[in-house]
Image 1 (cartoon, rainbow, N blue to C red):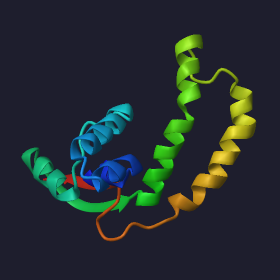
Image 2 (cartoon, rainbow, N blue to C red):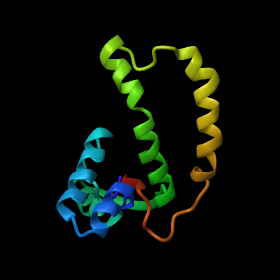
Image 3 (tube, rainbow, N blue to C red):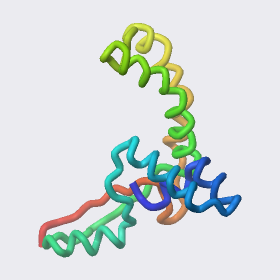
Length: 134
């Protein structure tokens, strides 16, 4: 994940538009903790970190457009019933066959176009890094 990921979230943008930066940042922290994002660095920050460990950043590629991040944000809210079922039944998916037949094909159809979108410059929600030992 990159710093853009948080800024692309609808909730973050909503709070920030009303200059409620504390709530915007809290919303961003909530989503990043939900998805276990431990750092949000761009490729330049990663380059500094990698250099400390004798690694040279050879290439980087940003991905996940703002629309893709927002689609994942929306789907996170739709996953609340699954979270509740995990608490009650100790399983994420109570009816796996239902998920396999109905949910997965529907999600593929909706999400596929978003995965094909290209990010502008170095402003994706995520970054792929290729580094080599010096």
